[in-house]
Amino acid sequence: MIWNETIECMERESMRKLQSIRLKKTVERVYRNCEPYRKRMQEHGVSPVDIQSIDDIVKLPFTSKKDLRDYYPFGLLSSPMSEIVRLHASSGTTGKPIVVGYTRNDLDIWNEVGARCFTAFGLGQQDVVQVSYGYGLFTGGLGAHGAVETIGGTVIPMSSGNTEKQIMLMHDFGAVGLACTPSYALYLADAMRDSNIPREEFKLKVGAFGAEPWTEEMRKEIEAKLGIKAYDIYGLTEIIGPGVGYECEYQHGTHLCEDHFYPEIVNPETGEPVVPGEMGELVFSTLTKDGMPLLRFRTRDLTYLNYETCACGRTSVRMGRILGRCDDMLIIRGVNVFPSQVESVICEMPELEPHYFIAVDRVNNLDTFEVQVEVKEDFYTDEVNKLLDLRKRILHRMQSVIGLSPDIKLVEPRSIERSQGKAKRVNDKRKFK
Amino acid sequence: MLITQLSIFLENKKGRFTEVAKILGGAGINMTAFTVAENSDFGILRLIVSDPEKAKDVLREYRYAVSATDVVCVQSPNKPGALAAIMSILTDEDIFIEYMYAFSTNGRALIIIRPDDLAKTVKVLSDNKVELLAADELFCL
Image (cartoon, rainbow over all chains, first blue to last red; front, side, top):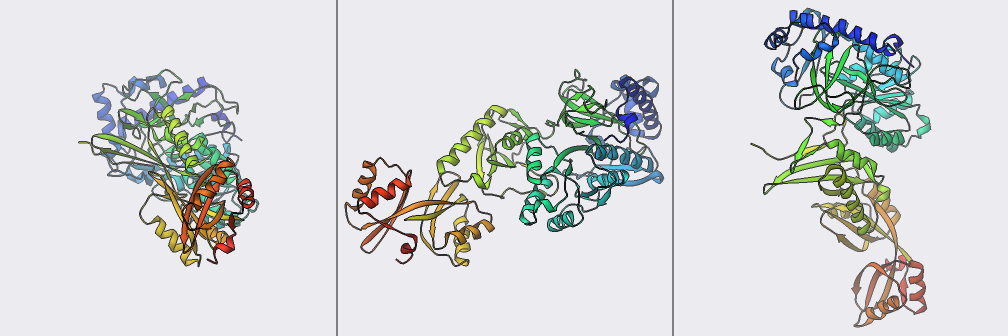
């Protein structure tokens, strides 16, 4: 199902025209209303008249996460506070959070793009959807909530936590859809099994999972354990929240709502655009937002774009899986390591649970690199040799994927923390400086 | 003649065995014999207990990975050369022993053996008049 066929299946050339008109308006708006952007553009020697088409976007300076922190809380707003109707903020694990202000119009845009996502997942008016993303400053809960209401579905505004009640209401209210983080989905799958309520008594069919990177293998795990079809919903607080992109039934990449959020891929080192199809850092410019439009925001996410028309009929550009974050990259013994690589190895091995923990430290000037994994209960054996052999096989896979040999530590079942929000999977204890 | 042995996966961390012992004690389960096979970061605790089914359930409740394995328990006189005699029988029949552990009390010794071929082991030992203990006998000691 397609929510907005006019836009989602628009000719590429028409889309570019629409994007050009919208970019021009947004640049004029921020130049007029937002002092830091005006100054930045002036320093860069670019003014709104230089922006005539979407191709001119490369003339604009970048916006970084640091800029959002520097102008905390409201420095980057392009609307007066009288027009801001809602605030959201990122979790802010380091220092101040990142704050985003939404006007009424921005919320309408958010609901529109959210509706495209949930419609693509096959959900509609008849469906009850349990939103188990956290409600609050985090965009997940209210974002998914607005999307489900917009398509006319019925929302269960569960938020995260209170697992037993999650399972009870999912069962009693006949939830067909579940929206939460993929790691929480796995947590709920365990809880569902522990509840001893037979699976056929649940109506659950579809999951909308996002807010943290996940792999194809993790999808299979979720689909098998929950007995549903699992879709990726993509979003960033800075841009709008969940709804920036979504998978269609073909699941060949994430369709981006590029009429509202224009994507580019640049070389993370130089900032230069890469050859189309090549991997690099994802950069977004909002094209329609009023409250806090961002120009060329560097997401730090690594991925690639595909402009071919999808089998589903949508012409919108598709983003590949997020292959890692520039910031998550660990440099261990001089080798670049992404936690997603570790995860892909773990998830492809049937003997292992899809949970892991990476511990990095420096002992006697040498980096230590430990990966903790849980063996599935059925695969624990009485024989030490078989477990040691499994450990060796994990090590070989890690070596070939990462190019490094971590210490593989087999830990007891369910001893790795199951996260209820964003999973914390890395502890880097090294002290530099 | 087969005895159910429980194997529990334990991380090499302080207090793990204490917890297992407490759980089993709390459930009124008695241990007759145990051994730990360990390497640098995990161990496998092998246990012979009074009620293996119940022990398995209660340990799983506490989220331990527990598996059950069949073993045999041989009784022999507690004197020099007795073990060698039994081992020779097995070796002569080409039976490979994955692991074994033993304890002695008064005049007799009890040896728990996990061979690669259980059925053959039982037959060979019985043919040679070696005494095998059943699970309930083990708990009457």
